[in-house]
Image: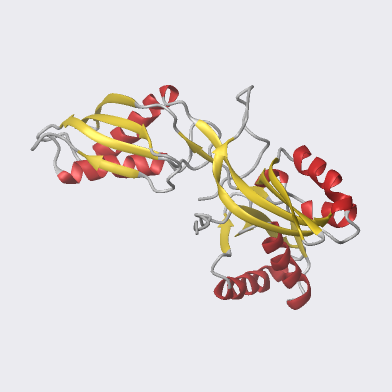
Amino acid sequence: MTKKPAAPWPLLQIAIEPKRKADQEKLLAALSGLADEDSDLRIDWDEESGQTIVAGRDERHLDIIVNRLLHEFDLTVDFGAPQVAYRETITYTREQDYTHKRQFAGQGQFARIKVLFEPNGHNPEFAFVSRVPDGAVPDEYAAGVEKGLRTILVSGPFAGFPMIGVKATLVDGACHATDSSASSFEIAGRACFREAAPKLGVQLLEPIMRVEVMTPQDYVTGIISDLKNRRGKVESQKTSGMDVVIDALVPLANLFKLEDALRSCSKGQARLNVSYVGYAPVPMPDREPPPAVAAYA
């Protein structure tokens, strides 16, 4: 039996703020308590917007959290539309040679590195390997390169979403006896990826969900039409007792209010089950980023 993949992070987030500023502490206390109960719930604070960001598994999960805040904790809150956790990845292999050289306030900075960037599937973990010739780059300098790469991959070059599926191998480098440091190699790591990025085939990814709908035969045509309008790909439909089971793959970004739509078109008789499948490229012939959706790490 094939094990279903677990989503590597919360896939949706919403911004929540109390309608009364006096309720801010009460809101944070309520969310903290809910997060203690629910390991899939993540709470962050956006300093720039002043909003509390609540991230969860799916739309139903976030709806439950909002309803508990409204009714169990008696809070009045404003909240934004759910936002999808897009990601970015690379599709090409490239070896990039970069030299960081600078004089500042009488002190020099020097770091030369050669890094091989390779696609690594859609692995959420960044893979870094150092294979420099013995003595060319001390371990602490190689660690600086890794740190620089990790910090720049937090925000991808295409639309600013975190990057996944990247492997970087430090294949060569050079340092200076007095002008080199771990921070110089950290700067070089960031700049090296920045230079390589236009040739790495950076691609936007979106989470894909498996949607299983069990419905009486009378409503199958309408439900399949709705799923296709959501960029869904129907993989199968089979009879199970008096019902038909429709199995489809649908981008998470197009699943909003699906449960309401199914309830409406089937007179409340269709049942829905949704699970995470993985990430897939967003079809973007014009290479434009998606509408303003916030990324979160």
